[in-house]
Length: 351
Ligand SMILES: [Zn+2]
Image (cartoon, rainbow, N blue to C red; front, top):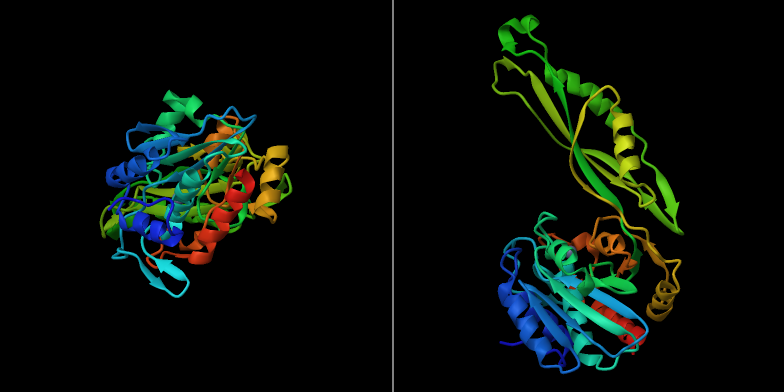
């Protein structure tokens, strides 16, 4: 079955959903997307691994990048898709095959867009950042991602979400002295010492901060704790893993310093780091987008690939169908109305 980009949008959406594409298994869907897009002479199509990039070259004054990932998290017995009233259920319906279907339909329909458009369908988003194909493309072919403005079609309930928060993870370890628990006074319990770290976290008051008119709420949370080797041994180490989600007004140095300050007196080991993205809504092209799609922007809480575009100097927003709260859920779903809202908005903006 091949994808019909010019037919009914809901049929196209369900066809995209029903081609299973858990991260690492996107080839079949990428093949279908590739084949479908090549049927349109107004698009120049590049295939790089399982990433498909289709672009117009009309010599317009501005170029817009519209991107979506093809992969999903693993299934939870939630394929094939099914419809209940206005909702379509199934893995990937929220995150983010609605955005993919809308982008495909618009790529086909916009033969002469008022701005040149680069449509990007990429793989390996739901896994580690090094595996994300946008990491490879931005390193090897940054020119493919070039543009004046980018829209990432991650689920936002068809609202515009500007920028994104940064995220970092670190571990902090308390150390003690191992001993038989029957003679605990010969040792020192590292898990008990971790209590003081947890107290600091429990008392932490996260900031709520306004950046370019959008309100961001930060969070500093323990996400894992481990320690102890047996039921009769005083543990000599306890490791706490902490995730800090921070507003895009903090740079790397500031975010790291903030964590070190909170855990003063302890050594922190940073595991991963991803900078946030300023919303970039002060730019005229962003304002034109907002006017065309209608409504105001709100802050994005998760980390998304908008930060990657932002790092390349391309302001980016999230705008796509489905409630982001349903992403990765077993009852993942997308309202049919959101698909039409997003498609109509993009067509209004680019026609
Ligand atoms: Zn996603």
